[in-house]
Figure 1: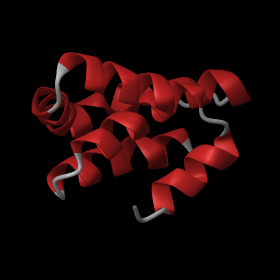
Figure 2 (figure 1 turned 30 degrees about the vertical axis):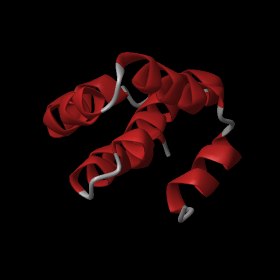
Figure 3 (figure 1 turned 90 degrees about the vertical axis):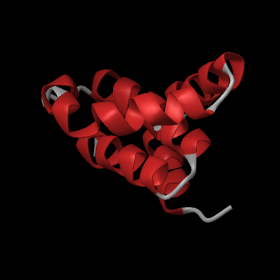
Figure 4 (figure 1 turned 90 degrees about the horizontal axis):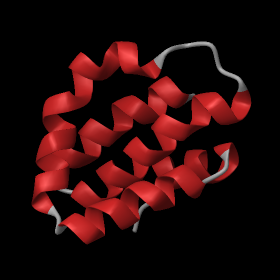
Length: 87
């Protein structure tokens, strides 16, 4: 699940939604530890890093930090719902 969220963040960034990208990045970074997932999401960083950097640079620092914190606060169910929600 975390790997899926980790891949959806860059998609959101590419589609022009940097805030969603940051929320998904925050969720992806926290979920493995919260559910005991053994996959190391950091191993896939090379796939998402350029889009994540672009997303963060598109936002003010405090807005990016709030979005990351929001993502880190989501439960698995909330993160899954958010990843498919349309604002």
